[in-house]
Length: 208
Image (tube, rainbow, N blue to C red; front, side):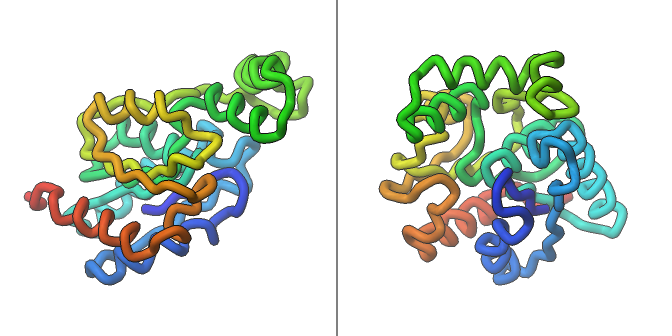
């Protein structure tokens, strides 16, 4: 089950579909572009949960979530509500506040702008004044026992190294790229990216 992030929409996940096809897996893409907060919307996790349950009902023996950026955060929320066999998190938003601070630094704006943006995004009244119908309710990666592969880049301005270290301590397997901007690790080295996913898939427990 593939989940895109905030910017490109469903086409963002296409780079990650081929490796699963080569493994004999079928893929479903979750589109959140109609939701007020897209993949940061609470409804995104609900759609993922529904897709997992539908896949199980069709006889799927294993279900893996593959999320990009905010889509990965939504996958972590969904994994707390329904059993899945693994999560592949590509440039995951591990902490929305950290991501906002990184975006502010990248835009060379004063640091306080990131703090203000975080409060606006997560506060009911302020988010409405800013034009969002609902605030962001899940702002940090949800820890779980689900096997997780975290693919990230040292050059990603939105995913802080400290947040990656926390996820690794919680048990995530991390694969680090060096020069790729946010969500573009595949572009840096497609072969290494796909090998990381194949290796991760091979280590997942056999379905009952």
